[in-house]
Image 1: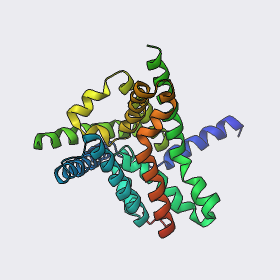
Image 2: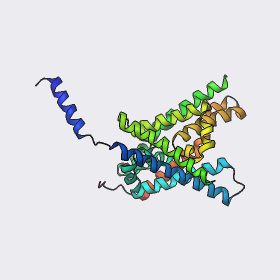
Image 3: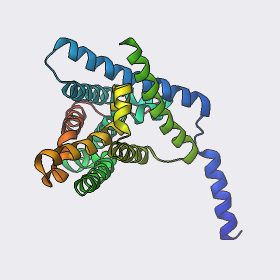
Image 4: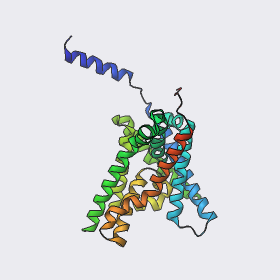
Length: 148
Length: 121
């Protein structure tokens, strides 16, 4: 058996073993969970505006995001968020709660390798690229805006 | 007011479902989806296309990670108006500082409290 044939056989084997996501239920659940998380956010922000009438809309949105982030890291710590992620897919990744989960999850996972080199380093393994690329785009946008 | 919640659900859910379609069709990893969506959000905001969505859907456009990209771009543009060229560097992170600080400190806190558990599913 030559190398090429071996590679093809291996690829077919990998394809057979990759967990298949069922298309329609997963689309439905991602829509449902993502929409519900956003509605929860809107609820928090409206409640804050009702309790503190002097609060600006931007401040209420900022507190709302902080609240959702707190909730998501807490649920990640309890191990509940990963279970939601199993059936919600992108519905639990795309909202800001998924960003929070992507920081909390490796932090908890790698705690056993030490606080500094485990927890604090691995914390940014997913969020790092997000912040780096987002910041780069924001600087490019700023420079373009500056000269237009 | 209650109609607003319908808009929030429809738009927020739609953005998440686009992510799910990418996950299914392209086998893209979830971290790449996050990066992609932040960049898309920032570009849409720069083109002035994201603000109408925020006005229409409120949290439905702010909670998805595209809203994070929107804050980065909006922060840079707003800071340039008050601080000039320095705003290019300070604006983006200032606008998103609350979210990043909260995500980091709560992750730190809960990672110290909770231990990882074996996944059963």
